[in-house]
Each structure stands twice: as C-alpha cells, then as structure tokens.
Image (cartoon, rainbow, N blue to C red; front, top):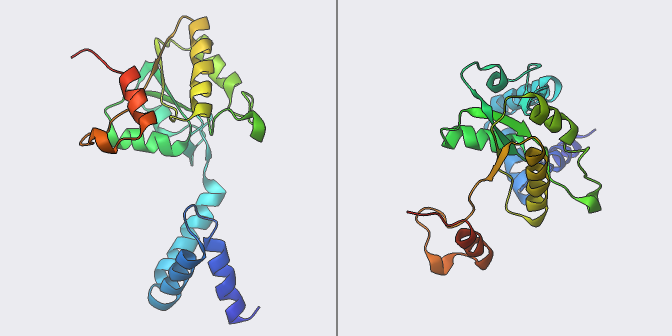
Length: 198
C-alpha cells in the first residue's frame, strides 16, 4: 500500500472513536506523523496491549486486566451496598468524584427491545445471583436519566424488593452553580420530583 494509502487508512481508523469525525481524525493523524511519532508508536503499543489483555471482571463486570478487578478485591469496600451503573466509564467517574466505598455492578447498557437488548444481555442473571447470595442492604441505581435507563432501573428495583433489599436512585436535577432559567424542563422536572427536606 502506498504512503498516501496508509495516511488515509490511519485517518479512517481514528474516526472509530466517539466524537471524532473526518476533520478531527485528519488533524490527529497529521499531528502524530509530523510532530509526535514516538507518541504515536507508544499509543499503538498501549492500544494493542489494552485490546488484548483487558477483559470484564468476573464479579462486577467492569474492565480489568485481571480475573477480578482491584475494586472487587479490595477488602475495605462495603459489601452491604451495591451501585449499579451502565458502563465501566461510570465506575471511573464515581470513583474519581465521590466517597462511595461500596461494590459495583456494570450492566454494559440499558434495556432496549428495539436493539435486541434485554435482561440477558445486561447480565441480570448474574445480578440476581448477587442479590440472592450477598449480604446486601441497599442497591443504588446510578443509571442515566433516559427513558430506557429509567425502565432498566425500575426492573432492577423490583428485583431488589423481591430479596428485601432497599433500592435507591441517584438524584437527577439542577447542577451546582446552575441557574434555573438555563435548565431544560426535563431536568427541572426531575429536580422537583427528587426534592429533599432541608
């Protein structure tokens, strides 16, 4: 393949990343080729290793290089609280921004019958085993604020009730520093529904 062909192939490959269109991919490709070849080579090596070695944790289903991730192996985590999220990225965000010290379960999506995603695809059988066997007292539903995610959270809440486990939902509403006139009506509605005593 000619050099020009490889450049085109590199640009096309970079567009597989979310939010990266042809123009952004072109800028990235030319930056690596013109200014940072060592960075590009390092990126390709790390990417190759990541694609080969990273898999799902057998316990919580997040991404890890091990059979069981560091969070699941950590003896200081609270086994009585389970936080259910939609993606491994959600685990990362919660760990970075909160003081949550419980356990996690990653769904890898939400219910979407149109796309053929039902309870089986989201690992509900594994989740139910956790609900039945673990010493859980609370399941925190930290799914997104979409119709599909709400339906997913509702189904998990029903599963939790079957095992007498309290199901709670993270609050959705006005962000810190946000002004009401700039908040969309759906967010404002969630904020009012989730209001708390002060």
